[in-house]
Image: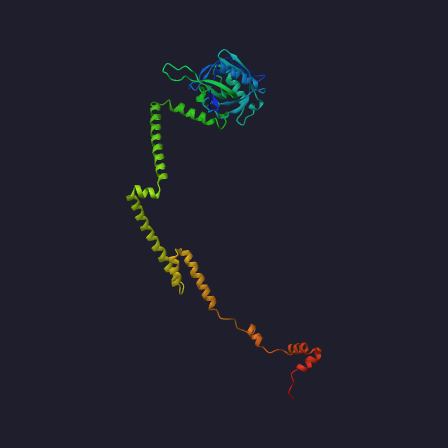
Amino acid sequence: MANKDIYFRSDIARGGGVQVNREKEVIAGFAVVTKGVTHDERGEFDEVALNSVVEFGNQANAGIKSRFGHPNMSGTALGTFLGRAKNFRRDGDIVRADLHIDPTAHKTPDGDLAGYVMNLAQSDPDAFGSSMVIHWEEEFKKETGKDGKALPPYIRVKKLLSVDVVDDPAANNGLFGMPFFSESVKPSAEITAFLDKFLNQPEAVEKVISFLQRYGFNRDTNKEEEEMFEEITLEKLKAERSDLYNSIHALGVEEGTKKERERAGSILKKSKGFKDMNDLVLESIDNGASIEQATIKFQEKQLEGLQKASVPPVGPDTAEDLSKKPATHLEKAKAYKQEHSCSMTEALKITADKRQK
């Protein structure tokens, strides 16, 4: 026994016998799964599988979650919550259960889902169907088919995750319940509606086959080109396609020489707006400087030259002039007082200039 898909959505089960109790809001006796091989021959629900569904269904005290979806939705798509499935039981080759509608299903953002589903079950009980999502393993069969190929394995249910009520695909091209589909279910309904309309056209199948062939060819071609360019290296190109390498190299040298000439010419032309920049011009060209970088160097050198050539300040307040200016009477008196330790009055008298009579 080998582990199979974590999630597996079963075929739609429609077994009639559905009864709607609007007072208790219960849809009783709807089909959950029927005995037999799935339509895609992935596996077979035998007696053991049916009994496992009943067992797992009744193990959940609150019931198994039930959502509203589309017949063609994937196993991982989440429908709009509808209620809980309870009272799982065998009815011959069918497993049946009762759907207890949750009050919240009356007040979805898109309207009364509960009322819609009960109307669907009541108006056409035979078309009312559901699809399980289970966690399963496969049990391989020892015998083979008439063609010698292995027969579909038995489905061994390991967990019952949900029992989802599905819309009637024959009603309005599968769009009857569109407002109630969740975002993960709507793509299935929309694609189904498109295919229903498209496949009604003559030669529709031939057109689809032709399109898929062209699509596959273009996809493979693009993939091969992407892989080819991902694997190319300079060494590999030089070794395997020297002609192509030499052509690319020549173009690169030509383009590089052109760009270098333009750069050197721009720097030389820019230097003419400044004075004595010959050394900086050669340095900028040799170092690979851009025209912007060379211009900054020219400006910095010019500013430095202006600062060196600037004239020192002149006027009565310069430090040199202040040092040469003769001391005042008060300054002489303060110096004499400090030197001879006398009074200020005496110092003023002694240092006073003698007036000529």
